[in-house]
Length: 325
Ligand SMILES: NC(=O)c1ccc[n+]([C@@H]2O[C@H](COP(=O)([O-])OP(=O)(O)OC[C@H]3O[C@@H](n4cnc5c(N)ncnc54)[C@H](O)[C@@H]3O)[C@@H](O)[C@H]2O)c1
Image (spheres, rainbow, N blue to C red):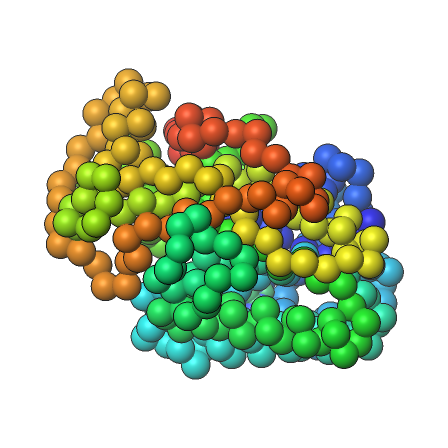
């Protein structure tokens, strides 16, 4: 395949690029490097620095490279920021998809894989969450991603395109090569596992557990964690699915729910290091439990989880100890 990965210098995009290249595909990256890193772009991929809303640049990329598939990972994704700047989020995420789809239509590019999120479900009614469950996002970020999903499905229907939509849960870990991992370009980390690892490494005084009075096994929030390499491999399978003129929407969970306290104790066990932490009050908008299976992706795409929680913790720890960027 000849694949354009938008956001291919970011965390998930860069791991997806690595897996595409390992699987023998030609890869092109479009990234404005707003949160991504130049160093995250694989040396065998061609990086175009620019914005997903730049139609002329999209025309150039599609014309020069005979792209057949787009994996769309570029987005703004910080929930509290989306509450402060909802218009910016819809402009970047939803208008960005509209411009991309329009360019794909102009150049007869038929296949798109889209990075969506568990945030489209809001506070779920059933656990594990199923793809057809009710969707009621509780923040502008989730709402913008659900709007993108609707737009992609409608455009696919109207213009004969194929789509795969992946709804991710909590993504963590780093590539086994040590070349790439999650980097935040000087911004503060917000995802739990990197924060716990930073506390274990002494890169922060302690980590805070937000609330221990939820209706869960130990009172702390329960989440489903997936290794970024497993997720990246899912994208290769998703792209191949669209290549066969097929479409679908898939949850990429692991079926296992871990509480925040369990993540702390498992990190201490795996690394043999104490994780300094305290318990503070709840944050707004954190659902108590988010867990999903990958049964549909396993059955239809042949997806499988290869890395468990221990591998997630170890690989993130190794990355953060020897971070390249
Ligand atoms: N990280 C997670 O746990 C998680 C969970 C659910 C969904 N997602 C989705 O995964 C995707 C990738 O997230 P990530 O964690 O890799 O974030 P990231 O910030 O590391 O990557 C996003 C990339 O997109 C680029 N980008 C942003 N706006 C752009 C624009 N207008 N034009 C060109 N490039 C632009 C950034 O520079 C960055 O390289 C996003 O679509 C996000 O909604 C992530």
